[in-house]
Image 1 (cartoon, rainbow, N blue to C red):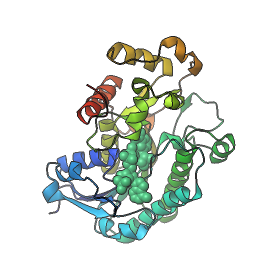
Image 2 (cartoon, rainbow, N blue to C red):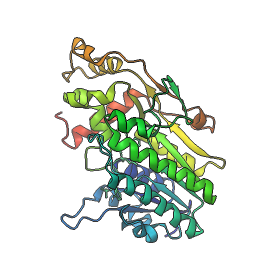
Image 3 (tube, protein in one colour):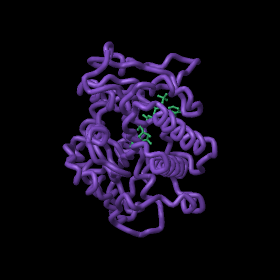
Image 4 (cartoon, rainbow, N blue to C red):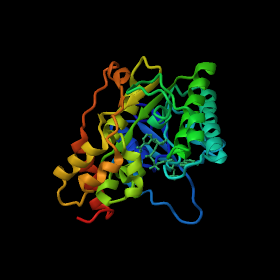
Length: 329
Ligand SMILES: NC(=O)c1ccc[n+]([C@@H]2O[C@H](COP(=O)([O-])OP(=O)(O)OC[C@H]3O[C@@H](n4cnc5c(N)ncnc54)[C@H](OP(=O)(O)O)[C@@H]3O)[C@@H](O)[C@H]2O)c1
């Protein structure tokens, strides 16, 4: 059945952002097609999607893989809009391997070519990341959409997270160049660390990272030197806003909270005294680094606003983790 608002495709719909986005799109009256990778070894649990209100009438699930862009033909055909969220999220490896870069760039370009050829897709919203902004030698403390991660700098400095930020940067640049060359409407949303409740069965990597202080995962503290965060519901409404807003162009940062490692430890210790957090003197090894602010002015000037603060982000993430057994009650 055709949704009142039209038909949209969400790539990577089984993921953290993808599944929350599908939930909100169905609520708003869209017909949704989504893609997941097929896994012949075990049947993927998609009940978080199939049990959503409205899913039986308005959600269709397809198998597609970025390594084979032609697998996206069927889900994209006839759609009015496409949200391209699919991308492997792995902060742990340092080196970005050529296969991941090729998959991210060629997979994204393949999807955009299909959108162009479809003649029905009016706009593509591509999910980028602040990883495509933050890593450079600019030394700026307020960053906006004009700043790009310097891929050569990431490679030579062997920065933690390079395996993620290099393909994200190159894929976003390729998407925006494609838009300029072909006239296809492509906008990119550039979220910071997405924190909050979740409906997917896996523990989302970003919540895992945000909760590493509570879970005592010291290996991951280095990713929280200058935490910038946004609530899952705000990032999803940002995606939908960018699809529906008439005049949009280029990149849009979506990041609500900018803090420091020490401020985050203090906030968590006061709000969640039941968890054992690292003693403050231990956090000295993390040197209080000047926070970097990511300016959302461009998005806010469109009329978009954030609804949630840090309290709702962590309350929601902790509640979902407890419900799904990732954290002891
Ligand atoms: N969470 C954050 O803090 C954050 C912040 C900024 C940007 N982002 C971006 O948001 C998007 C979604 O991230 P997430 O946090 O929701 O992560 P996630 O839960 O790991 O979801 C990632 C999705 O990408 C799909 N995917 C991975 N490799 C693929 C491939 N080769 N072909 C097709 N699909 C593939 C996965 O599909 P399967 O289900 O089939 O495995 C999964 O559904 C990503 O583009 C990420 O870079 C996330």
